Length: 313
Image 1 (cartoon, rainbow, N blue to C red):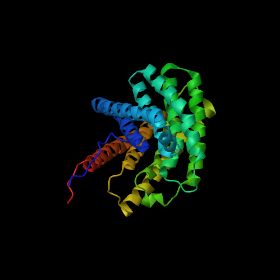
Image 2 (cartoon, helix red, strand yellow):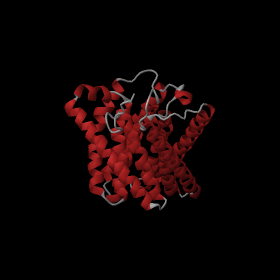
Image 3 (cartoon, helix red, strand yellow):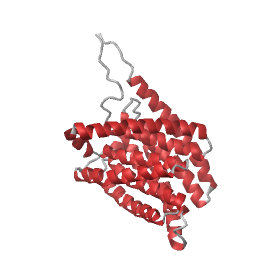
C-alpha cells in the first residue's frame, strides 16, 4: 500500500524559518573567510527559501487568518523576523544597501506584531524557541548597525544600540521561563539559548566597530562583546555535552535551529576578532564555521531522507 507523502514545500511550519537563518549566517561566515563562491551559493539557497516562506506566510495571512493567528502566537513565528534580518545583513555585505534596507523595514514592521503575540502567550516552561525573542531583536540591531557602518547613518547606530539593550532584557526574560530539561531532551531548538548569546555578541561587535562610540562607551561595548561570546561558547559546550550524553540522531525540523547557533557563533567570533584585534578569535571562528557547514550538510541529509517515499505492507 502506497503511503501518501506531501511535497516538502507544502504546509511548512514557522520553524522552517530557521533553515533560512542557518543558511544565511553560514553564507556570511564563508564571505568573511574568503570563500566567496560557496558564500554566494548559500545566499542563493537562503534567498530562494526565504521567498518560498514569505509566500507561504502571506498566503496564510490572506487565506487562513485563524491558522496564521495561531502560529503567530508561538515563538517560531519570530524566525520570520530573524531570517529577514540575517538575509539583509548578507545582502549589505554585497553592497546591496537598498534591498538590505527594505528587508530591515519589513522586519521592523513584523517585529512588534509577532513579539507582542508571542510574549502574551508565554508560559512557565518554554522550549529553546523562547530565545527567539532575543534573536529577532538582536537581528534588527545587527542589520541596523551594518547599514549604519555602510552609509554612516547615525540614527541606525542608535537604533542598533537600543535593540542590543532590549535584546539582552528579552534574553533574561526567556531564560527564567526556559525549561532546562530541554538541554538533554530537546529536539534541536534548545541550541537557540546559545545562538541568542552569539547574535548579541555580534551586535556588540558591530557597535564596537562604529565610530559613534568612543571612550568608555567603546570600551563597554568591546567588553560586552567578549563576555557575551564567552557565555555563548560556554553554553554551546554544555549543549554539546548533553548531545553526546544523550544522542538524538533522528531528523527534526528543529535541527535547523541547531545549525543556526553554530553558524552564528562562528560569525560572532569573526566579527569580535575584527572589533577587538584578537587574532585567535578569527581562527576560532574559522574552525566553528566548518563545524557549522558539516552540521548543515548533516541536517540537509536528514531532511532528504525524511522526504523519501516508501511502501508499507
